[in-house]
Amino acid sequence: MLNIGIIGTGGMANAHAAAFGAMRGVRLTACCDVVAERAAAFAEKHNIPRVYTDYDVMLDSEKLHGVTNVTPDAMHAKISLAVIARGLNILCEKPLATSLADAIAMRDAAQAAGVINMVNFSYRNSAGLQKAAEIVRKGTLGRIIHVESSYLQSWLNKACWGDWQTNPGLAWRLSTRHGSAGDLGDIGCHIYDMTCFLAGQDISEINCQLRTFDKGVPGNVLGEYVLDANDSFASIVSLSGGALGVVHSSRWATGQGNSLRVRVFGDQGGIEVDLDRDWNGYRICTGKDLKANAWKTVTCKPTPTNFERFIKSIKTGVNDVNDFANGAKIQAYLHYSFASDAAHAPVAVELPDAVSA
Ligand SMILES: NC(=O)c1ccc[n+]([C@@H]2O[C@H](COP(=O)([O-])OP(=O)(O)OC[C@H]3O[C@@H](n4cnc5c(N)ncnc54)[C@H](O)[C@@H]3O)[C@@H](O)[C@H]2O)c1
Image 1 (cartoon, rainbow, N blue to C red):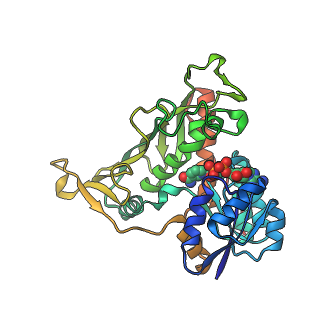
Image 2: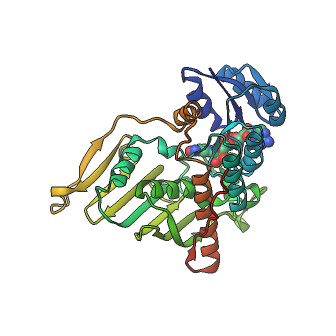
Image 3: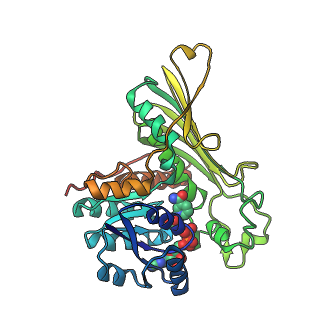
């Protein structure tokens, strides 16, 4: 039986608890939140026997096999490093950190400690994405030439998730002093991850523009929130295998709730993962369909979720590919996107190699 502890018992932690709680051979033995009543209510809801308000106390008191860090982004580094320092396996929410330096420190610490380390880029739970990535890795599309990716939401335009002007859970995402790296930090990390995972290539250069649009609020200040975080970004990227790509996202995309789509085009075929269209499938145009530009839809059996992969990694000792090194790589893309926007120029992505254990 594997004992799992949860740190941070807010909104997203419910998905973690539901997933781990439903797995055979896994039990949730402890949870922790700085808001005691929230942690207690969470423990009762998910049947978790022990509750803490201090994660250090939890880590020292419990016999845990793995810890999931579901705290706000700004706490990811400090708490994950505390977990790793105790030799415990760690699943951390995305983005891995709030700075490239922290993300690299987390990557190196996890690797030096030899613990299982994963980041919850949750769109990797899509069977369509997993199977399409296998097809690209097999070389079915030939030489990858062009990539096009978008992550589109509309909650700034229409109150599809509630009114951001009265909902602090949305309002903080518009304010850098509340820890938000804007649209780029919140959902840009997902679309960069999905793009590189599907294309099977890293990003070597980024030319990014960020925008913060007028929201019709006098002075762009809403109570304690200064509405200065970016709302949209568009990046032209060069990939390590020579392909060119466009990656973009927005919170102003009218008519789009939470829409992710990545298309990869090679000289022998194209592939598309469109999560609005199909979570468990992809579309492909290759072989004799090329001349007619005809696309086939392929439906896949569900693949293991990040939570299942984390448990499998703990059991086998073999780390999943969605590790802290990948998290640090995506953090580098966020870092160099900001740098490119500030410089009004393309910038090369530089990521120091991991220190070997
Ligand atoms: N993978 C995904 O698709 C996805 C979706 C939503 C959120 N997230 C990520 O999950 C994380 C949490 O987001 P959320 O929406 O649940 O936020 P939230 O604010 O609802 O919950 C965070 C919780 O952490 C607690 N917390 C803060 N500091 C703490 C500390 N030092 N010790 C213990 N608890 C502490 C807070 O009190 C709060 O209850 C964020 O990093 C976010 O980016 C990921």
